Length: 412
Length: 148
Image 1: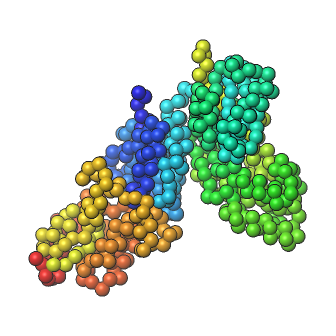
Image 2: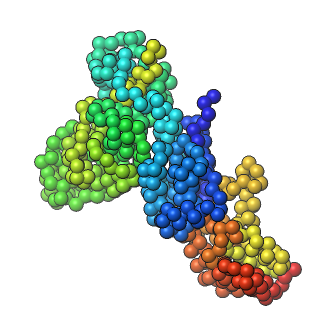
Image 3: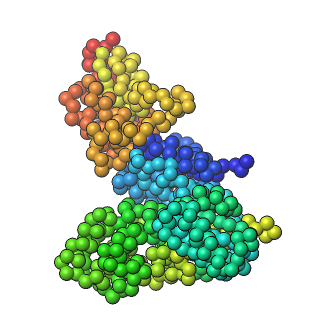
C-alpha cells in the first residue's frame, strides 16, 4: 500500500471547535495523515521572535514555530494545512503570513482554511485531495502534452462538460446543465464522441473531475479521478500555453470559486469556496434571468453599462438580488445593472479569495463564467491587469482531465 | 474548602498547590477528564464536539470565533462555580499555557467580575521572586479558610 502523505497541521482552535476529527477524516479519505510538527518548548519563543510577527495567542506562536521547523528542514512533511477560527483577526493575519512564508521558502504545497464548528470533512475533502495529489503525483502533473485518444469529463455543480482529445488537440466537445449526474455525463460524452467521430472503444484513457467525479468515474471506468484544483490548473496553463513559470488561475464556478497560484502548471497555494452564492456564477445566472436575457447575453450587455451608476453588493445573494430589483425599480438601465452585477461578483472574489493567494501574471480566467466578458473586464479592472481567457476555457476541467489521463495509456 | 479557579487553567503546579492547601482546584484537567471519548486517558482534548461551541454561546456571542466559544464551554461553568480565583499573568509556557489570547482575555474579565477573593500575580522571573510567589499563593489559600 502507498504510504500516506504526511500533512503538517499548523492551527489554532480546531480541537476546541470540535472539528479536529473532521480534518483527520478528510485527510484519511485521500490517504493523507495529519501530524503536528514536533517543536521543543524552549524553541517556540526563539522561532516566534525570529519570525517577527508579534501575536498574543500562544497557539499561534506555536503555529509560527512549527512553520519555521518545516521551512528550515528540521521536520519533514509532504504538505501543509493551515487552519484557524473564522472571524479571528489575529489568526487571519498569522494564517496569511504563514501561507506566504511557506510558499516562498519551501516547495511544500500549502492550503489555508478558516473553519467554524459547522465545518465538515466533506467541505475539506477537495482541498485535502489537492494537497495529496500535488505531493504524490508530481510526475503526473508535470505532463505537458496529451497523447493518444483520451476523454475528459468535468461533472460540475451547474454544468457537465466533456472533451475528446487526440494528439494534443481537442477534437470533440459536449456541454449541458447538470441535471441527473450520470445521465448528463453520458449525454455530453456521446456528444463529444460524435463531434470527434470517435467510437467509445477507441478511447485509450478517461479522466473525471468536478463534484460528480467519483460517481461518474466509477460508472464509466475512469483511469483518473481527480479534484478540480490540480486538474483545472493543468487545463488552464495547457490551453493558455503558459506551462512554464508562474500563473494565477481564477475559476468562478456555479457553486464555489477557485483561485490558484500556479508554478509550472502545479498549484502552490489555492483557495476554494466563497462566503455566499452572491460571489459565484449563480448570482450572474439570477441576474440574467431577472434582466430577461440568456446568460450568454449578459456579458455583452454589461460591457455597454457603467457599474458605478448602480450600488450593488452581492456579499449575500439575497441582498444582492434586492439591490438588483431596487436598481431596476428606480429606473437604472439593464446595461448598468448587468455591469454592476459583474463588478459585484468580481469584487467579492477579489476581496474574499484573491487576498489569500499571491497574484502573479498571467492571470487566467477559466470556467463557464470566463465567457461573460463583463465579468472578465471587471476582474481586470480590479486587478489592474489584462486577464487571459484561453480558448475552450469553459471546458477547462475536462481538458485537464483528458491531458492528465493520457499518462495512463498503457503503452505510454 | 473553597472551589478555586486557576489561571492558567492548565497549570498542574498551581492545581497541585490548591489541592495541597485543602481546596478544590477548578482547572482544565478536571473539565477535560469528565469527558473520555478518545482513544486513551492521556489523549489531548479532542473529545470536544461541535456541540461545545454552541454551549459556549452562553458566554460569547455567535460572532465570536468557534475556538473561543468551545473553550468557554469548558471554562465558563468553572468560572460560574468558583468561590475564589488565582490568576497568574505572563506565565512561562512550561508553567501552564492557554492557547487563545481572546479566550484568556474573556476568562480573566469574567473572573474579575465576580465578587470573590482573588489573587493576581505576575509569574516570577528569578528565585527570589519565586519564593515570594509561592508564599503569596500559600497565604491566599490559607486565608480562604474552610480547608479540609
